Amino acid sequence: MYIHEQKNWPDFTWDQSRLADDLAAARHLQGKLLGRMTTLGFPLQDEATLQTLSQDVIKTSEIEGQKLDLEQVRSSLARRLGLDTGGMVPAGRDVEGIVDMLFDATQHYERPLSEARLFDWHAALFPTGRSGMHRIAVGAWRHAASRPMQVVSGPAGREKVHFEAPGCERLPAEMARFIAWFNQDEKMDLIMRAALAHFWFVTVHPFDDGNGRIARALADMMAARSEKSPKRFYSMSSQIQRERSAYYEILERTQKGGLDITLWFEWFLGCFKRAVASSETMLETVLMKAHFWSTHAGASLNERQRGIVCLLLDDFKGNLTSSKYAKISKCSQDTALRDIADLVALNILIKEEAGGRSTSYRLK
Image (cartoon, rainbow, N blue to C red):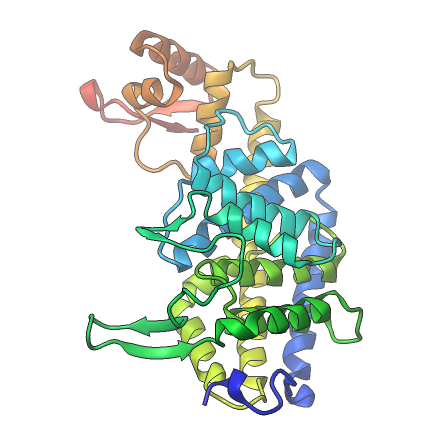
């Protein structure tokens, strides 16, 4: 029996005393991080938000097996946040859609949830009306023409069913109840509400596809409400992606159990704590960038040079050569060599030891 088949669904229960220490620790880490970030000033907070949201978009897609281009994601988010990162690149529809959804969830967290808003998010995720090779219902709940919504694994003919969602005939009432709960003002801690929103939504599975991404966006939205701020400094999706196997395992275990979901809360709070702790690495990167630009504040860089430096500061993969510079900046080889020579003269780039055709450069 799945949890949504229980007689008193969705009257969830949990052991609050068992969760108290984990919740207190999660809130302590959250408050400590937010306190540290408020001392950095708005420019660094904006850069941290850009980094966090970029990782959220990338990782929530990776959980579902979709690979997105980081530079497209950063450019799309930077444009919406009003930030100049240099070297912006155009983003494809797949990137713009999920950025639209996550941006709306976190930057407009105070707005009420509605059926129309969820439909807009879903339509943004699937602008072509297809999921891979399959046409799906977009901006609408699953309908009778859809196959039973099952989570399966294994080869064709020997599939293992991990979970089967409620039938489509139940969805209007199920989602009306969920949306009403999401919008109501109750005493339940908002991080706990983020955990419950995530589990409840993904269990109902109201769409043909995209349910996991939307469930994680709803959790991010509730976390933003808990902080009363659109600025994001930690990524739950990044941590969930790192713990992907455990994530699916605890979901399946809880969805096949009774209405006591204490185990899900324990896992979510633990994941939340680890996500906040992991943000220290991101913060170090932000501080490193701030120090770099402060050191080179007087340097006069053209748009191509600033774009390349931004890419190098964002953990550019491989070595920077003049040919790579020309390709990325869409300029001639001669222009690339002149730009690089200027950056070397400004002590921004240094030449690696290998010379000749292998000549490459890195940030000093």
